[in-house]
Amino acid sequence: MKGIAWFFLYKEFKDQKFEEEITKLMLDDDSKRGIYTYVLTRKERFLNIRAFTDNQQRECYERQKGICPVGTEH
Image (cartoon, rainbow, N blue to C red; front, side, top):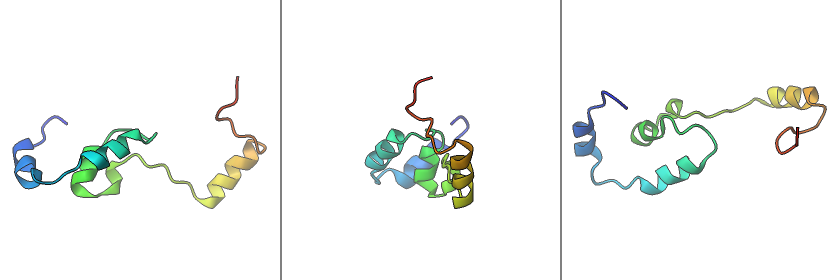
């Protein structure tokens, strides 16, 4: 977050409460990168959101032969 004009951001957003939303986003399993920028701009491109199409989900399911690798022991 180097090079950000914090003074101007503070002046614009000092009276708004973001703590609850930031905490909720931090608890999510996705990357923590971009959370503050998202909260200020509301542009989802700053969040690390992984979204798969129905076809991608089905292909992955078939490739794994219906077995979810999460939580299985190696």
